[in-house]
Image 1 (cartoon, rainbow, N blue to C red):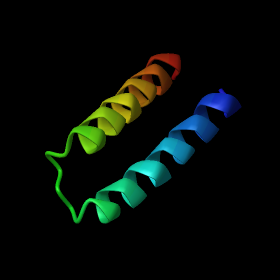
Image 2 (cartoon, rainbow, N blue to C red):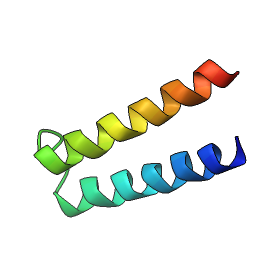
Image 3 (cartoon, rainbow, N blue to C red):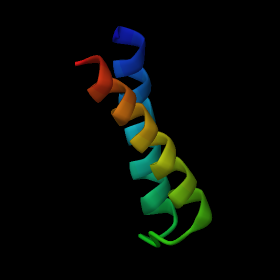
Image 4 (cartoon, one colour):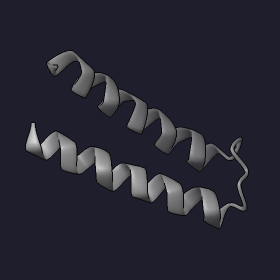
Length: 49
């Protein structure tokens, strides 16, 4: 669970930075892909709780 929490936080920060880097283009393919990864991690977290 601790590993999952760290992975969620790390991915969240990466996504935030990527969105800023892409000038808030939420339709950018990299942003979408990382957002989907974060969504999967959050779903895993939710299933455990």
